[in-house]
Amino acid sequence: MGQGLCGRLSSRSGRKLCHCHGQHAAVRRRRHQSAGRDHHHRPFPGAGLMAPPPISNTIRRLRFDHDEMTQQELADRIGMTRQTIAAIEQNKYSPSLEAAFRIAEVFGVPIGEVFQWKAEPPKG
Picture: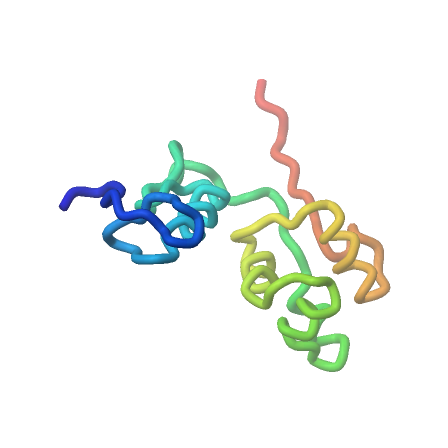
């Protein structure tokens, strides 16, 4: 079978299921689409050609400065998953402004101490 939907319908939602992912394809499809990927893990246009984000952070250092707080403990305090905290620390994901403020609040520091913007010099 090719890459696509197999035509089977989910008993719960009535959505078509993909042959390669089974019953939870509709959930996975939404997750992949929201992450900038389509259902079959093809990267969004321009992926790999983009420069790393110009935002860095000090979350890991701040966690260790606060009684070696774990990623899970931080995640629980701000209502995120541990995986999201790990992705933010590794600059693979930029948090929402609200999440950034929540992280700063946990550590009792200004947001600028947690996240730093590395502006590129103007071209011209």
